[in-house]
Length: 106
Image 1 (tube, rainbow, N blue to C red):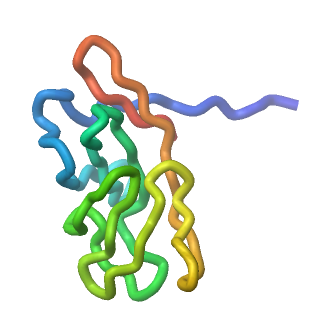
Image 2 (cartoon, one colour):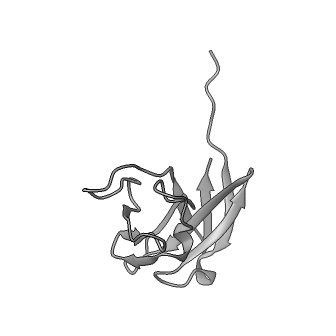
């Protein structure tokens, strides 16, 4: 049986990602929200809140969370889970930063 390997795609230069602001990248027909956290870590999640599809890249970032701009749902950027009492999750993507370039694995 042959296993599928993730493909790493360069999506941005690290210097082009402002801290605590989302940026949308499109890969294979998907919209992905990329965030550079205040810690310097970079996270990537699908750009769609599980509640009503709010564009997460436009949300407010605080720590490791993004707040949906439509209804203020709080989503953990590390695991994609929505904080209770709300329920749901978003797809997260593995991110690598090497030599100032940001890669997402798909």
